[in-house]
Image (cartoon, rainbow, N blue to C red; front, side, top):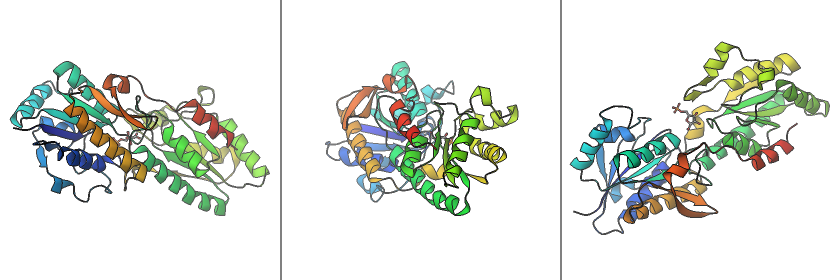
Length: 346
Ligand code: F6P
């Protein structure tokens, strides 16, 4: 029997997942006798034995499609006491030789553990719209999300300008400010608030009044979902705090910030939470190419038995890094990028 390679997509979906699946399948057709099997819904597919063969025909037309044809879940393979044994049983039933795990921080952390603790021969591919994975300059998914944010900021810009309003736009990114910074810089935001820099309401109001005095009667604020007010100027009560910063489910700071800004400045203020539109849609050219490069590389890593490694982008070269390095810590927003953003505040 030839080489049998499983592929799974786990965690939040991101544009480019189908491009990766296609690339793995297409690369496999150049390896004599190799077969690719799709593991449905992330790690859950291995636990529940939900596996489907992926032939060249299965990936026709999927390159431009958002989401993942394999489905996804946040199931952790270590959460159930019997999960590792069930995964091993599915593995043997299907005669798997290797697994390609495509995911963000949670999914790849699990992959690292499954390699170290259970010797499951696997390689990783970095996927996240948040760009918070260490070890790679960029994962795929981030570029498309930033383009979506940029387009939304452009649209909200014109309505804010017409109505002379402040528009507070909340974006995703979990505990890192990459989407907010890139989306905000690209969209010409007047203030960008990120988790790495707690914000002061008085300073924001000063900037808005200053803009008003200079003749700009509207302003755009981009706020990351995990941005926090500075403890010395915290305007959130306990109930609001626990509602906004829920474990694994952030959201709502934009609404509260908009209320406070209007109360302090008297300037009419609205908020918009871009939410899940940031995860959907067709991948950008950059993400299609990057996902394709990662997919081809991952299959070649399998051929070379580079277990416990992840495909990564460094200085525009696709290389391999240990999964350990990728998940050791959250990659926070680069200070240099934040410095550039700050130049345009106010
Ligand atoms: O990690 C991607 C991400 O979209 C984060 O930006 C966001 O906080 C989270 O996923 C939302 O996850 P869920 O799909 O579980 O609501």
